[in-house]
Structure formats: structure tokens, C-alpha cells
Image (cartoon, rainbow, N blue to C red):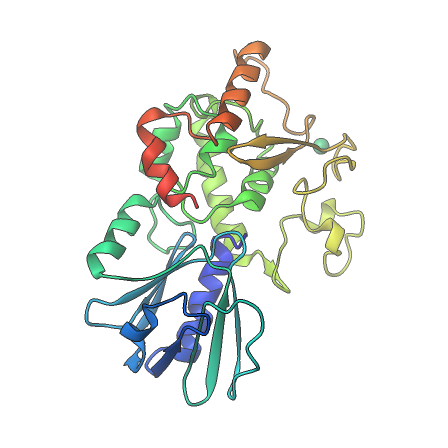
Length: 302
Ligand SMILES: [Zn+2]
């Protein structure tokens, strides 16, 4: 699933290629009737918030796109390539084209509808003025495991499965600790690390989270199997301590962690049995434990 960094990359790229130009919008498979509302209009700007994109076509028309797990764009120079596969939307200017496949949502929103989406989302580490304060205050009171809280788009927008695992590893944080048991200092550090990692994390469209000194091959570019500390490395030894990386379902997605580097802090008063209960409940409710949050999160964390 594209995480916030990739969504922001698309916003930048599409602004550079298409903003200020008149766009011809089509729906080759007929599954995007909103195309008719946009075609022939000028694209003003592209906004990214977390994993959501909004293309502003003026006159209260914003094209909302959520790529979900399988959505992807392809761009190129005119003419269009031959239509292949299930093509939800394609658009073009005189010189460039864009294709969209597999997105979870593509709809024309009014300004008010887009504002409602933004209001539900938490601060985005890639937004220059984002304030993590309220989200951190919420986490400091939460019984939910920190690894589930990090995936909640109403708390932090844009963090997905790769970043949650890697941020927690880099902070040497036990992923099963309740939010309230994670020191404020660590939460602030997690946020700052998210800002750094998500701004600079792409190399050849790969997210790179390992520090060169920790890689088995520290010289030169990160090798494909050395770009992450824990994500999809279950069964393999930790680069730092050699312990076998573990995996487990948490908040509806697979969590990866190193039991040694991310061991529970001594003095954290969580009995082991209590932890087990929390984990089971988490996977059953798809990671939503806080009742009040349940409806809110389900709409946004798609
Ligand atoms: Zn380790």
C-alpha cells in the first residue's frame, strides 16, 4: 500500500505536470461517471493529506482519490498507450497522460466533503505546519498498543504498515506497550523520526529506513534485502542484535518486530497475560479498541 510519502510524491509530480492545464478526463471502463463533471476543466492544484489526494478543479469540484492497497498511477507523454487491464480513469493534456488503476476511491467531492475528510485525519508528518500535540496527548491516555495507534489515520495521517514497524524499531519501542506507557519523550521522537524518514525515505521508489552502519553491507546504496530493519524480515536475524525477527497480526495488518531490541522496558507494569488479551482483541476488532474512535477510524483507515 502506498504510504503518505508516496502520496505526497504523486501530488508534487502531478502538480508539476498538470496544474494550470486543461484536462480531458475519461473513464475507459465506465466505472467513474464523475469524469464528465471534470473533463475540459483546468486543474488548479493537487493536495495531499496522509493517504488522501484532492485534485482541485475549481467551482466546488475536487477529485478525491484514495489509492488503498492496490491503487497506482502511471504517467507518460502523449499519445496514450493502448488500454490494458481495468482502467478506472485516464486523463490527458495536449502533451501528457495519466492512468489510474485499482484505487479504493475516486469520486468528485464538494469543498465541504473534502473539508470533512481533512477534519477526520490526524496531522500529517509531511505537512510543514503539522502539530502532533493533540495526537500525542491522546496516545498518552490510551490503553491500545502503540503499534495499533500508529496505524490510526485519525491520529497520524500517512503512516502505514512499513513505517509503523520501522519507526517503532528505530525507537527501540516495544510495539505491544499501551500508548499511555510510552514516554512522551519517545512519542515526540517517533514523530520527529516520521518527519525525517517520510521526507527522505524514497530511493528508486523504495522506502529505506536502515542506517548504513547497521546494514551487513554498509558501503554504497542499500541492497534490496537491507532497506528495512524488521518489515517483512520475519524469520531472519536482526541486523543489530541477531535475534530472529517476529511477526504477528495487529490492527488488521502484520506487525514485524525484534523481541530483543524492542523488549518491554523493565518496570513497565504489564503482566504478560494482560498483553495477550489485548492482542487477541485487537485482531478481532481490526485494531479498533477505543469505542468512541471505532466509527471514525473505520471510515478513514482504508
Ligand atoms: Zn534486534
